[in-house]
Length: 181
Image (cartoon, rainbow, N blue to C red; front, side):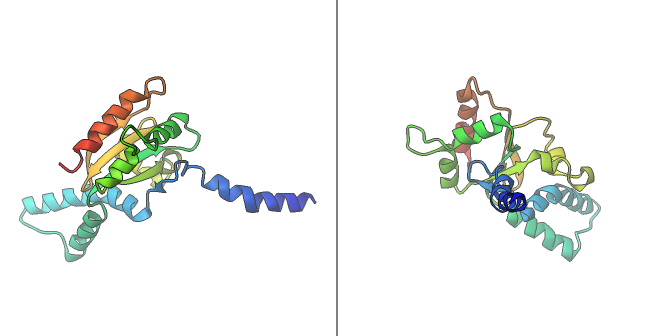
């Protein structure tokens, strides 16, 4: 009986536990976007350095650059947090609540063509032997909300004040309203 209960726990509970970070029903940052965010700055820098000396990227590097730029084209919002972070869950929860217009902030973002992803800080900070997005984006604490346009960081929100959520939400609303301009 003990083995059956352990098996049942593994079959039913562990898959649910593995999905807990996706606490708002949003998408985790896909691997191709992760790689593009991580590699695009250095590839652009290499392109600039070569151009300064009168050279170009190799055809393979040019294709990679084009692929990365296409992957990150448009408006992207990334929330860096982790499953047991209460302010992280509160931030995304507040962003999912409908306002007076009847739409949530994430719905307003999507209506502008924006995409929203989440990055698990605890997993990211332990990956790639120190080369990770959390280090690149200088994430020291969570939650952090990052706004990108065509792969370029436009704005960031560090932290979430649960006592005064409107201060954070007002900044997010302003960024969403100005997106695409």
